[in-house]
Each structure stands twice: as C-alpha cells, then as structure tokens.
Length: 89
Image 1 (cartoon, rainbow, N blue to C red):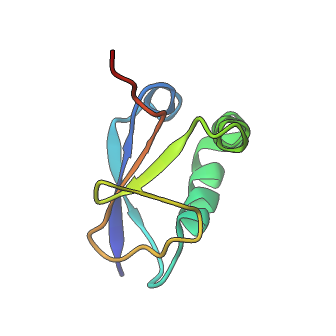
Image 2 (cartoon, helix red, strand yellow; image 1 turned 90 degrees about the vertical axis):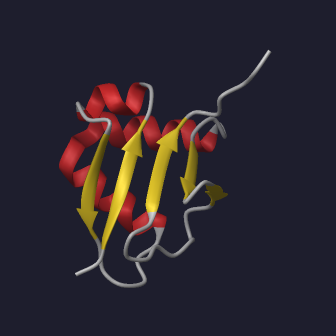
C-alpha cells in the first residue's frame, strides 16, 4: 500500500501530539481523502480547526514543497505539510 508522510506545524502539531507521521492511503487519494482519515484519527477539534481555518484561507496544504488544493492527488512517498502560512518581516 502507498504511504505519505504528513508533517504538522504549529497548532496542528499540538493537537496531534506529533510533528510527523506516515499515513497509509489508497492509490489516487486526494488531500481531501487524507483529511477524512485524519479527522477520524484526531477527532472533532482537529477537523474544526482545519475546516474553519481553510474557509478563512489561513491553513495551507503543501505536497513536496508546493501549495496544493484539496482535490490534488497523492502518491506513494509524497510529503504533505499541514500548517499556517508563515510570514516574514
């Protein structure tokens, strides 16, 4: 089965208690499919944070370093980052 590495930054790391983990996916799954798995694993608080912040455009998903939307397909070995945008000064 294919696996992706999910990296959590900021509040997402606090909720999951992890900085990263390997997650088994189905071939051709999207970021949205991955999130459904993570919602089951980490519960309502995680889901609410992602959905609320995504609507406000303050949560980002990056796959292999590139910003992606929820319909983007994932492949074995991909690295998925869930975070807030980081600004510089």
